[in-house]
Image (cartoon, rainbow, N blue to C red; front, side, top):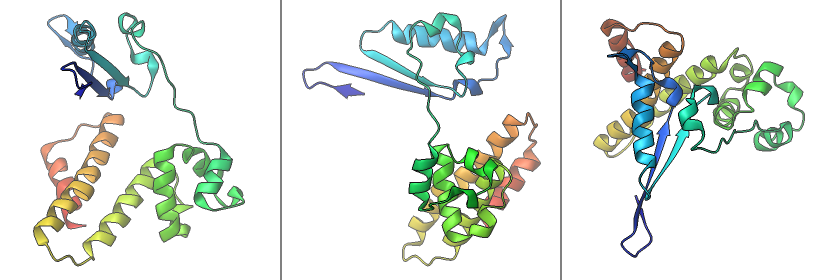
Length: 195
């Protein structure tokens, strides 16, 4: 919610991950139809703006495309990556990793791993291994630290470590169309809490 100070209130909705909607039918309409209708109703309001993020623009139905400007995130250049990592010659990093770390989030994660354990960082095969190794390392580092306020530590640990770990594994399963049963979910929760 935003205000210009003159009682004019404006709303900005950020709808992240439109591509993650499972498009099954309910009474002859798809879930995407319901979502699109809700977005169109929001756009009818003068004081409302909507931003949609999706991994692929093709997911947007034609009836929505005319209301939005398409912005595409560009990959980082080798020069920017080299400067950020502090490595003059990027050929010390395997080609598949150089391609992967053109994504800013993955570059940030890779840098943290490369600074801690370079031999493991350059041995990863894909982004899933990168994320898994990062979470394992991060959990390991933070579980050995000593804090004065135990409750704060527990909250911080759950918010910064357990929930992202679980989100990564659940999204990974969704991307691979794996069905997670209750036992599998509980195993992940236990792994996240005990590591």
